Amino acid sequence: MGLNTEACAALVYLVLYAILFVILILGYLTGRLRLRSRYSIIMFHVTVRLASQATGLAFGIVGYANVDLLVAYFILGAEGYFTLVLCTYRFLTSWHYHNFKSHDSWLEPRDHPDTPLLKRFLNSFVLFGSKRRPMALMHYFLIAANAIIISGGSQLAGGHDNVKSFDAGLSDAKIMRTVGQSIFLTINCVLLLCIFQAMHQYRRENPGGKMHGTLYILLAAWPLLFVRGLYGILSGVYPPFNYFNPDNYGDHGLTDGFVISEYILATTMEWASCALLMFTYVTSRNDPPKAPLEEWSDAGKELGPGV
Image 1 (cartoon, rainbow, N blue to C red):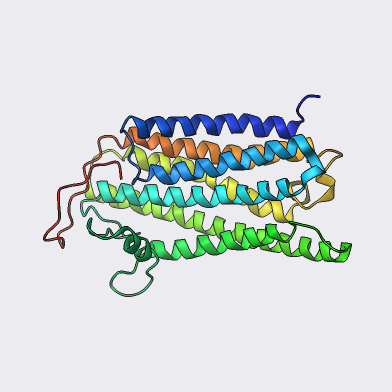
Image 2 (tube, rainbow, N blue to C red):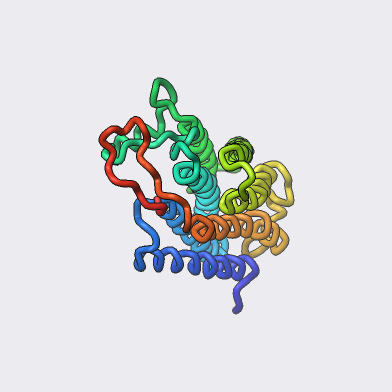
């Protein structure tokens, strides 16, 4: 018996994400990428997507024999979008560090190189005071949206005592998924404003010069992320895209029409965005190193462009 449409689509993108995974691993092994760099966030995203595609493939093979695989696929898919939006913000912030004349970012000001890793992590959530960071607000909203979507998906995991209990969980899952995806889409819209602001500042600091290629790539990735986010909202309210619509399920799993729309509007958008972010390695190879900030009187040597 051959693989159904769902299993075939999951397998194709499992291979495509495996290619990105291998490219990243080779980058680390050859020293072109560093573990403490923005590419490690991309690696995390690719790992999540590999897990998502693996569960999608497994569900496509076993069908309703293990419905929890489908729930895991939904949740991991949301995790993939969450990490991808975060990746894009991190890539933009890193670009600020290397290319603005201040070598700093208004999204997330730099920490001193001697700052312990745990303190750096905690600083990324500071909203008030002299160390406040606008990116902290994005972190809180991303985490909240992610938690809402995961909680919604967990409403359907495991067994239910009766139909009424299942229907109540189904209704809650729809609402929570739509709310979470709406937050993701809003954060993605803010990202567009941040990219335009970066382009405006770069042009002001480099009058008459060419726009940096990395900003063009980030701008090209944005519509893909927007389509992915819009699909996430529609998947909670528009029946043909709705995971919870019984009409989207056949005898052995999801219908072909649903699978095609899911993989075109969601998975393809994510994979293409991820590939574009990885391509910024090419456009950023000649970026200047991160110079010590003026307030660092005892700053060490300059840091390379890989961070």
